[in-house]
Length: 409
Image (cartoon, rainbow, N blue to C red; front, side, top):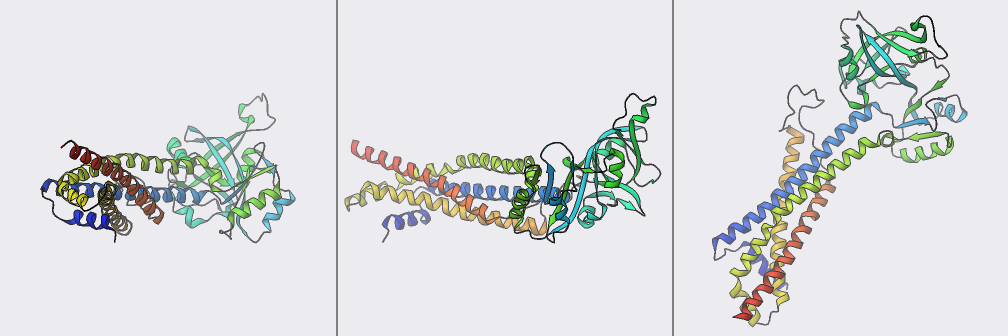
C-alpha cells in the first residue's frame, strides 16, 4: 500500500480547514490547465501555419532540382541527364532557364526574373488555385503567354483583362558593345500576361514563360539553369536523391525542397520553438501557484503530520505526501488543459471558429490548425516535469521548515 499516495489523494479532494487553501489549490490547477491548453493550441497553430506555408511553397517548387555546382548554366544534353527522361519514376520533367531581365509595361519599368519552363510540365489544378486572377496559361495556339508574380503586377500596373497590351522583356545581347542604337544591345521580346499569382515572397518578382521564349530573350539555346521534376515513389525520395547525386557526380547539385529554400524551413521551425520556449517561461510563473498551495497545506495539516511522526513516520514519508500532492495538481490540470486544447483545435479545424480578417487576400477563410500527437506528449512532459520539480523542492523546504519550527518549540 502506497501510504503517501493515499494521503495526497485525500488531501487533494477533501475540504481544508481554511477555505483559502481550497481556493489556492483550485487556482493552481487552473494555472496548470491554462498553461497546458495554451501550449498545445500554440503548437497546433504553428503546425497549421507551417503546413500552409510549405504547401503553398511546394506547389511551385519541385521535389527534386538539379543545378550546376559552378556557374549559372549547364548543358542538359549529358548522358546521365538524358537518362532521366526515360526513367519511369520521374514525372513532370522540365528544363528551366532563369535570369534577371528588365520588364516594361505602359511606360513603367521593373527588374524581374524570367523563368522559362516547358509548358506541358505544369500541374494546372495546383497552380490555378494560387492565382489572383486569370489562368495558368503559357501557350495558346503556339503563341507564348506569361504568368506573373504579384510584385511584377503591382510595380507595372499590369491588367490581364484588357488584353490590349503586352509586357516587353529586355535582356542584354551577348557580344553587343557600343552599338549606334542602344536598343541593338538588347534582346527585346513582347509577351501577353494571362495570369497573376497570389503574393508570396519567393515568387513575387517572377515572370513565368515557355522555355522557348526565355531562350530567345536570353540568347541561350543550348544551356539551362536547372532541371526540375517530381517522382512517383514518394516514400523513397531521399534515397532516390542520394543515388542521383552519386550518378551525376560533383559537377551537379541535387536538391530536395528543403535544400532549395533552407531559410524558409529553418525560420518556420525556429519561430515555432522560440514562441513555445517563451510561453513555457510564462507558464512557469503560473505553475508557481503550486508553491503557495503546498506551503499552506503543510501548515494546515501540521497536526496530522505530528500524529504520523508519533506513529513512526519519518520526514521522507511526509515529504512524499506533499510531493505527490503537487504532482496530482499538475496532472489534473495538465490533462484537463490538454483536453480543452484538443477540443478547441478540433472545433477550429472543423468549424473555423476564428476567421481570417476579410480582405486579407488569404488562401483560407479561418486560421489553420494541425494536430500532432507528439505535441501532446511534449507539452505533457514539459508541464509535469516543471511542476514536479517545483513540488519536490517546495515539499522538501516546507517539511524542513516545519521540523525546525517544532524543534524550537
